[in-house]
Amino acid sequence: MSSPRRWWLLATVSLGLVMIVVDNTILYTALPVLTGDLGADPSEMLWIINAYPLVMAGLLLGAGTLGDKIGYRRMFLWGLVVFGLASLAAAFSSSPTALIAARALLGVGAATLMPATLSLIRVAFEDARERSIAIGIWATTSVLGMALGPILGGVLLEHFWWGSVFLINVPVVVVALVAGGILAPKTSARRDTPWDLVASLMAMTGLVGLVYALKESVRPGGNLLHIAVAAALALVVTLLFVRRQRDQEHPLLDLALLRAPRLQVGFVAAALALFATTGAQLVLSQRLQLVDGQTPLGTGLVVAALAVGCLPTGLMGGALAHRHGIRRMIMSGLIVSAAGTLLVLATSPGVLPLLPATAGHAWVVPGLLVLGAGMGLTMTAASATIMSSAPAHRAGMAASINEVAYKMGTLFGMAVFGSVLGSLYTATIDLPPAAPPGAASSMDQARALAQALPAAPARALLDAATTAFDRGYLWTLVIGTALLACGALFTALRLDKTAPARETSPQSAAAPSEAGR
Image (tube, rainbow, N blue to C red):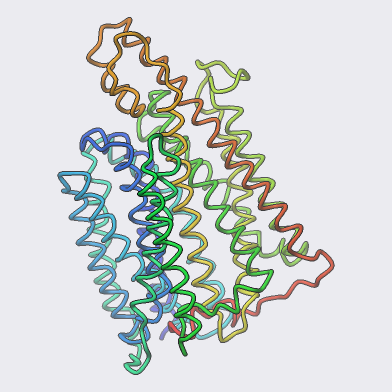
């Protein structure tokens, strides 16, 4: 492939990646408006957020092998079609259930697209040095997507209805379809290569059961029978998945890789980095709008500071890891992230006695920058150690593990932070006399019901709701800080500081998959 054409292909697949990542973060600013218009309850609100990364994470392991059978050009184009149709369905959803289903379909499209983008880069860039540069650009676009999502959501909600946050995907899909059809090279399909659909569905079913059990267990009045059934289903399906992988000649996941200490540390660090940052973005976005009264656009601009802090350390992380070692890099990144989370908590006006409630919301920006800086260090070092833990012929499988770690971190960050925040709000709110009982279900409901009350009762209700919300907000960030600190301790104990760092060659680091080229 000629030089200009392959770089234009890189721009095309990066556009697809940005679209995938934006759909992970664009709802942070749109969620209060969206749930209010659709009348979604707190449980439905969490599933609106979680359905997308949940389905995507569950299908990622099998998506690469499917590309072997049908070719990655076709995989990329079909993924775009599914993503575009799901975006239309989401934009015009008339109920929370319909939106949850559309978000799940978006996850199918994203899982189809993501491995195909990296595999097309592998095919187009034959020179190892150029390929490394291309994959670095590809990875950086995901961080840009994180920053763009909240801002884009805010801009759209300033001028249009909530469905526009999904409808914006359609023109992007059309452009990428045309460009991909022209630029993407045709790859040979391997009809004899098996594709384990059953194992892929097992992975997704196990995740659904685990997340549901987790959500129900932290919800006040959670159904114990539902928790037990969901947890048992997750356990049984996971055990069957492991057994199936041991019996397969071409498994989705080589279980021997998971015993490597470096891969374990990298997986935990990658998941924790996304867990803490995703959760912090989610609860901060809600607080800025529901407590501070910020617009969606203003909220997006504030939250984007996290991604701004991530960019420089993420780009410099490779050189720093080479100089200081993976162990020190991961530990430093997690500790810096923990410090940033604490700083966000300390500078959130009115939550702690350090700042009055009337202080400006811009006080949280330094904490977000620090949290982002730690995240950038952790992401780069974690990805490097995961990739270096696998031999060259397993580089693609290691890359899939890396992506699953990020998706699981995002998924559990949303589920845990959102559930803890909502549960503590409901359990601790002290409603004033004559306040509507429905105000205890969520801060969104309290604000909506307060609009129908006279000034004095409305103020009393909002004060009580804010106190309960901030109590939940405080403990979610404390939990995030503690888990990041535990990740740093796990890294210190699991990796021997005297062990030499294994360097990853450009060829092995860049190879997307032996099973998914």
